[in-house]
Image 1: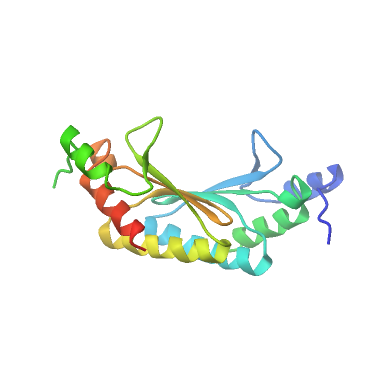
Image 2: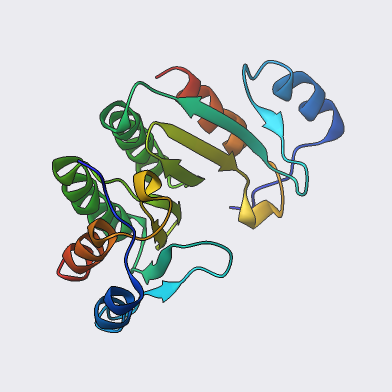
Length: 95
Length: 95
């Protein structure tokens, strides 16, 4: 099934509602940085994100340094942001 | 307990023996990229590294994109590479 890039109207309506996420400076992706008390808490969060990623077959580009987790979401099949990224960002925010 | 940066002799003897790790281009750190079959395998590896990190209280700077895991090791308390990084790189290689 083809994955379509978000249209201009969809961007306006969906991205505005995504608390804490911002457009990446250099590509069609959304990013958010999460801070935790320590590595243990950051890892617990990452483990929950990993389960979401695997079960939805949509995987983040992410990095971790001790208590900080940076996540970027984009859809390679759409060559940019798709509804899959919006859904995943919402699911991550709900954790 | 103070953590000391590796001396020149220590670098020579320890770093040469670290299979697959290279000096970072822009700072006193070692880096290695690991490739797996898919996200599930990459995540399993990361989970094992997380346990080593937490139990040794020495945490990597790392990123993951689907089946690829990039790890950088350095010791902030030593402002560069220390024996703790060498030990952790060996433990990761042993996985």
